[in-house]
Length: 360
Image: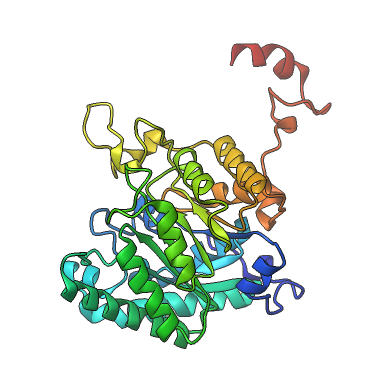
C-alpha cells in the first residue's frame, strides 16, 4: 500500500532542506537508502540478469511509493532510480527508445517526493559495463553515457550527483570529470566497488590511492558501495580513514560477507553453485547486524552512510535508529512487551506468559 502523503509532509518538514555540503560541513551524518534494483526484483517488477529499471516506465507509481517508503524509514535523500538506466544497458534489452523517458520519469518522481518530504534529491550515474581500461574508445562511450544522464539530472532539479559502483578508478574518474563539467556545480559523491581483492581496485591502484585521486579530482564524498556486506566494507573504510579529508561513504549490501566470501557474488548455495543473485536470501543480514553496522559507522565518524543491494525499508529504519534518529517509521518499531507470550505487559494472560511460552 502506498503511504499517504499527509503522513510524510507536515508543514515543518516541507521546508527546503539544507544542501549536502552544508550538512556535511556542520558535521551531520547523511543517510542514503539505496537498493531499488533488488527490492523491485523481489517484488516481481524487475528482471534479475540485465537488472534494468523498467519498472520506472511500466509502474511509476510503485517507484514513487518506494521513494516514500525509504524516506519514511529514515533516508535523508531520495536517490533517483536511474541506476543501470543508461544507454548501454537499454541497448542490451532493446529498449533504447525509452532511455530519456526512463531517466526523466525517475528524476521527476524523486524530485516530487523530495519536495513533499523536505529531503534532498540526488541524480545517479553508475558503471557503464562497457568501459575497458585498454580501449580508449570505450572511455568516450562512457563519457557520453554519463553526460546525458547528468544533464537530465540537472534539468530535473537534482541537489547533487551520485556516481557509484565503479570497479575501475579510470571509469570513476571519467564519471567525476563529467559531473564537474556537466553538473552545473552540483556536488559529486563517488563510490567504488571492491571485489575479492580488498587492497586494490580493478585497474590495480590501491584503494587508498583511488580515494585520494577522487578527492583530488573534486569529489565532495568518496567511499565504497555494493558487493561487500557490512563486515567486509567497514575494514575498507578503516584503511582509508585518515588518508583523505573529505567524508567517507559506506553503503554495503545486506549480506553476511566475510573473509572466505568477501562479496555477495562469491557466495555458494547449498548445492555448491553460485548463489548470486537468486539464492542470496539465505545470506541476508539480520536487523541486529545492521544496527551494529550503524553503531560502528557512528564510532568512526562517518558522515555518508546507507545500504545498497538487499536493502528494504525496515533495514533503513534500523540503520537510522542506530544512528540516533527517530524516523516516522519508528512509530512501528518492534515492541515485544505486548507479545502474547514473550511480553511483560500486565494486561497479558499469565497462562501464555508463564506456561505457553515454555512450549514455544
